[in-house]
Length: 85
Image 1 (cartoon, rainbow, N blue to C red):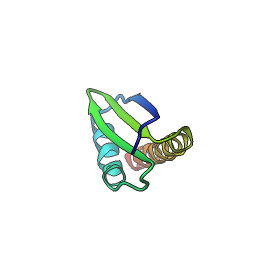
Image 2 (cartoon, rainbow, N blue to C red):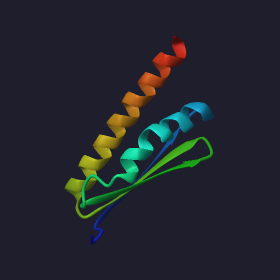
Image 3 (tube, one colour):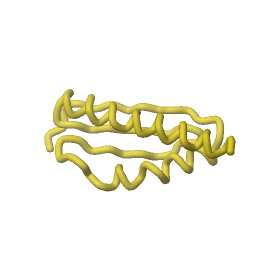
């Protein structure tokens, strides 16, 4: 895969527990390469979730970032709802 597009997103969390839960929920997706056009790396850096995407083109980069940001948003919402229960 020839990398032509890259992006790194750092999202800050106030809770280490929330960040760890989120990372554990998303790790299976990151480890199972869904497409050959993009690779994803997720890691924890203090209170930050670091999402790094390397893609063959900007279309693959945009779609991969969109998918992960939606998953992150949905997972954070679920974690918040569970914490309130």
